Image: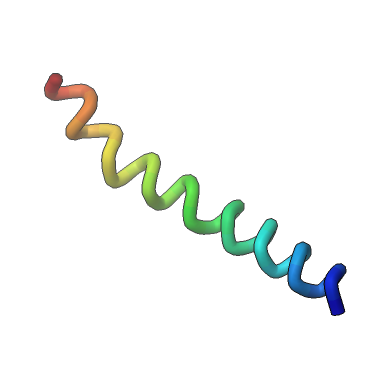
Amino acid sequence: MLKTRIITAVVLLAVLLPVLFFNYFPAFALV
């Protein structure tokens, strides 16, 4: 059960981090 949660967390991070990065990158580029 713990392994499942870890795998889920890793998958969520792998999906969310690029999305957040590409959303905020233009803002940082302007600064």
